[in-house]
Image (tube, rainbow, N blue to C red; front, side, top):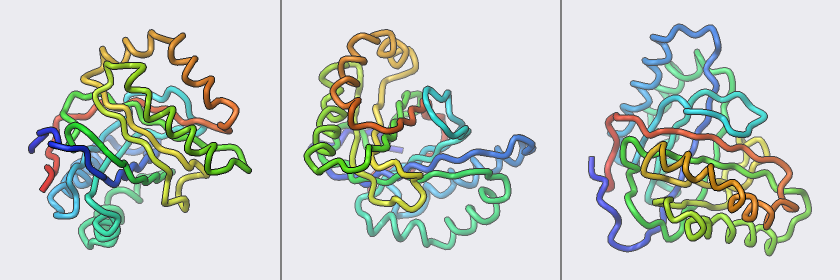
Length: 228
């Protein structure tokens, strides 16, 4: 796996899947699901894949337990992945039998800087926003500008990716997705300790937000597709 930073910012398609494993599932079946989902990193359409249990839920009306994060060079590659026989087989045989709920958010990350493959041990703060009805394009742009600028407020963040969800069918009404990648858990906790600065940023968009999902995830040591 290569985690070399991109020489110049580039456009990447983000695909985040949250799923809830049934509470009575045998741990071996959960491990098998993770193993088989991870094996999809060999598909040529994928430039990065990471999956595993969530570290914690900071804010969510849904009790998700696991996360899948994949990246692609284009929407066409994402579509090809979703219909690929290997992906369909894994979902049918290993995900659906133990899954209790699922949520999917996709967006275009413009000008993504840094590694396309998030390094193992990195901490990810995943945030989904449901905007209030009736907001105009200028309001949406303002929300995205605030999210995109959060790295300037918290320099400990290695990478910010955000965008408007283009796959609303399984997104439960959440239309904005973002990922903040930090070097590790200690840096994430240090960022959280700066609550006053964080609240100042939230205040800039609070009037536009109906609901928020905030989840933390640590990238595990596992095979991952590198950028081709």
